[in-house]
Length: 169
Image 1 (cartoon, one colour):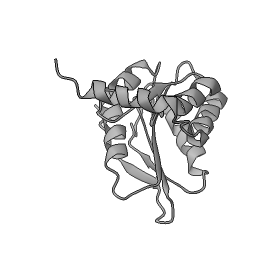
Image 2: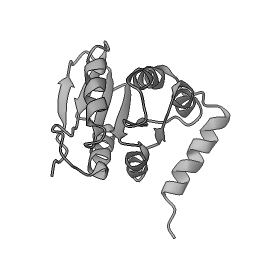
Image 3: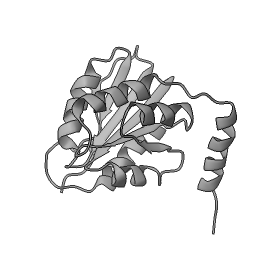
Image 4: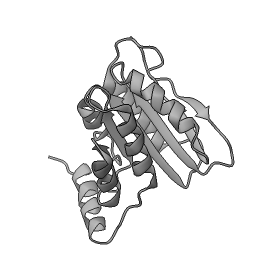
């Protein structure tokens, strides 16, 4: 079974921004296209954690690796985001959200990508390869990367999300 392997696709010490991307086998075809698309973005380093072969694998492994690379990059970045892809986007987003400090948003279009950043300060974008057209995926990525968190009334909500992460039962 395939396992995550983080590789820099684009690495330039001058870049101040980082994208980490990963998928399971169902997300593989779309992730490969997204990697090619993201390579053209100026100023961004890009890490691809795989899956690097189109064989069955488990999405939690790739969600975890994207999130760990996000939380502990090998150098400091001003801006960093993760992107995760599986068949529906559901399983991989649920897995990513198990990692403390991750706010992964399963998005379906421009609006959900925009709101995930503006109101929820999402740091990982999830999508479903089987239900997302390529052009919509590119639009969601562009929107997610360019939309700023509004703060204000939303800041308290983010703090409440973080408080839930630390709860014990």
